[in-house]
Image (cartoon, rainbow, N blue to C red; front, side, top):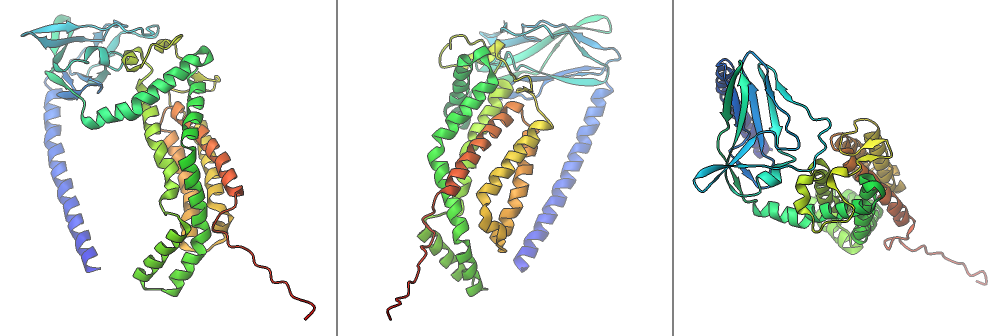
Length: 408
């Protein structure tokens, strides 16, 4: 207890010092920002001085003049002039992807306002080569033609972890989804996500089935563990040893039931980035092959005229996904734990209500396409759980009936 109090005291001191230093830093940064705002300048800079390839280059523009500044719409061309340093001179780089420019318009920066422009649709074409770059903007300020230039920034090679991530998860899922979209009528993103979900869950069927059975066995041996806790109350070492012996005998692990969710998280994250940024033509270089009848600019992202899969659905979809998750948790928990009054049952009961809320909040912060994946995956899991619940567990103790001999 003394150690805990000492640790808590040191942690509190550290937090106070950190907050104080952070406040001082923000104070002086605020003074600097205020000085810039009052200088009457147009601030034009990149959000970073170094970007790895595939990381989206973004520029920040702050209009500290008294008049609005207009940036002409040049869609499908890049919004500003990109220059790369080659052979001791600055060379202009251009990109003209197949974009839908019907809704594009001139960009206006009002006085005392700040905006950011990201090169989402041009990034891989313009910044695929490593080296030194800068961006220029020619515009009128107070009726006078002026050219502004950002700071120099460098493009570097992706790190090893990013390369592994792209090679193992992102690119295979990206290509799998694009292949399915090419096969779907009307290049439907929604039906492709549904089919991809079913394929992924079928591939993970064996490990997830084992995890569900292990979770069921964990519930069945819980009464035995509770008896051990009562028998050796206060002797944590003895309780731990006998609990591990029971787990070994039942061939279960307390972390085994987490496997289905853990296996899906990389897929979920990769799918999020595919839907968020992967559908624009600038990412065509990621394709393993040119899929017939597939134009990245013509993918149908509207599913059944209900969901716009690239945008967040704040209300209906999160409630549906949360409800499905609740049903799956109820099925996974089982009736035995509902009636039991032990700590394990209380924790499981709490998770039955907490997990669906967490998943609903998660769905409300992601593109609807990610929510569609999770919903179909949950339905698949519900069916799988029903099958597991009907099966006989190897930990069930046989029923012994004593038959009396009436002749005696």
